[in-house]
Image (cartoon, rainbow, N blue to C red; front, side, top):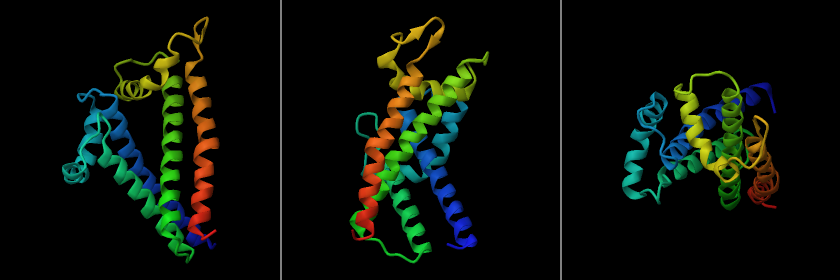
Length: 191
């Protein structure tokens, strides 16, 4: 692949993954009932609502899960993958493309939680103001992952629950998302 195609593929991935990150933040914030008075929650709502409002009329929430945002994130991954295939001049099979996009969304979601959990645990080690909007939102989003291990893995003043959850998420990436991506890639190329 030429240097220009490499640069273009990086820009495509960055643009679509930024959009998917915003949509995943919306899904996670709604599912965890994040504080709407938080300026970050308002930012996420403000920039995702114009796109999600028409879709939510057709595809309402299921319990507290914003299905419209999830479907839109998956469609963004489909479009990203389609553009990347088009850059190299390949027309993938539809079933493979759809499965590959779903696997990439799963992998991206797991990575999203790993990064968020790592950042939250790193920030919580320092004397940071607990009312800081980023720390509050991240804490609200990672709380459901940590709740089953809360208070069970403490040694002295160190809580190992975030590390255990990150290891589980990494294993899920390796054992669930990667095989699905390989299967989707094989189907996309007609294998």
